[in-house]
Image (cartoon, rainbow, N blue to C red; front, side, top):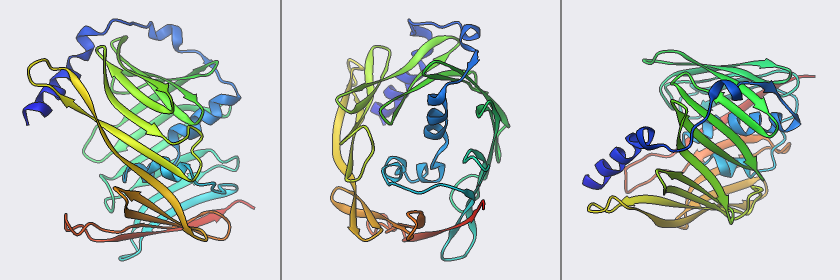
Length: 284
C-alpha cells in the first residue's frame, strides 16, 4: 500500500514541477489533413473493448467496417444491450452508448466539421457532463478537455502517442522506441507497453511493464510483465492469451466482421464466463 501511495503522490505532483509549457490558444487552430481522419479513428474506435483492456488486439484484426450504420452488442445470457453505436454514411462514428451491463452508463456524441471531429460530448451517470474540443494542425490533433487537461495526439505507425498538459505545463509525455510506447513524467518513465509490431497485425503480442516505486528514493522501476497475444486458432476464430492462458475468444463472421466476443472466465477469481453478440444494420 505504501508503494501505491508514493506512486499516487508522484502523479499528483506532476503539475507543480512540469518544465515544458505551451500556449493553448496558439495551438487551437483548425487545419485538418488526411491524416487527421486516421487520428480520429484511432482515438474513437473499439471503445467497448477498452473496458476489457484488449483494444489493441481488436485493432490488429483485419475487420471490414464498411457501410455499417449501427452496431449493437448484447449480453448473450440475458439479451440486454451492453453497447450501441451509430455511424454516418462515410463511416464516421456519430455516437455510442455504454449501459450498466458493462460499465457506468455513458453516452458519447461527436460533432464533425470538414470531415473530422470538432467536439466530443460525454454524459456519464453520476458525473457532470463535459465537452472536449478538437483542433488540428499538420500531423497533430489537439484536444482541449472539459477537465482542463490539454492533449497533443499523433500517430507513429499505428501507435497513438500523446502529451498531456495541465495549466499549460507538461504532465505526461509518450515516446515510441523499438516498438515500445513509453510514458514519462517528472523526468522518469512511469509506464511502458511493447508491441510485437507497430502496425498491429496478427500474429500480435503485447508486453506491459508496471511501475514499482522504491520507498526511500521514490525512484520508479518498471517491472516487466509477460507477453499477451492474439492468435488464430481456426477459421475466423481467435484467442487472446495472457500468461499463455486463453482469456478471451473473438469470432468473426464470413464478412470479416465481429460476431462474438467471449470472456472465458477466471476460476481463481470466481469470475464467470461472459459472451457478447454483435448485430449490425447497414447503409445500402
